[in-house]
Amino acid sequence: QVTLKESGPALVKPTQTLTLTCTVSGFSLSSSGMRLSWVRQPPGKALEWLARIDWDGEKFYSTTLKTRVSISRDTSKNQVVLTMTNMDPVDTATYYCARISRRGVEFDNWGQGTLVTVSS
Amino acid sequence: DIQMTQSPSTLSASVGDRVTITCRASQSISDWLAWYQQKPGKAPKLLISKASTLESGVPSRFSGSGSGTEFTLTISSLQPDDFATYYCQQYNSNRYIFGQGTKLEIK
Image 1 (cartoon, helix red, strand yellow):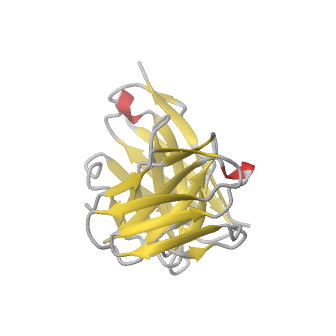
Image 2 (cartoon, chains in turn purple, blue):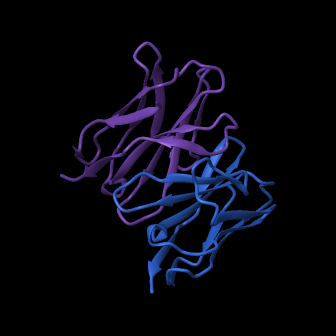
């Protein structure tokens, strides 16, 4: 059974750096064709893709956030980590970890999401 | 980046109605389009991939069509469980863009 679970702080202060961890089970991050992404959703707003990391370690980022976002992985722990610098109240959102299909096009499994509030 | 325009933003309908949601891409994305259903407090659920391929377990009243720049999601006969928010999502050059969402409400 494929599962993804996000963890990290529920509250961060403006200008701080956010670090979120996605722990997966039921598949291997290093399996050929495996791709993991982070997607966020501000309250009442649309989904926004942030970053992707592939089975071979290749990384891709949102054009608008690439200067602030970093994605990495620890295959021994089956974890993917998102780092976002210089957090602002507009970054308040539910952050989801999602697996991308073998085709590489759509998100076929999602974590439950974790709400991060940015406030002083 | 390619822009996605999803319409309408809100749709009021009744059980049994046939409804259609549209997504338009600012340039051709072939059939690299997916549709998701999201209920309050829950993660999105993949309904349709590659514009028209129904995911396993998704009721057959859902269907997708289109290619190039214009795509539609149709629900043939609305059921109470279908009232939710729907998002389209496109893929192009290792980037992913979601539409703005359509909230399907009970009339």
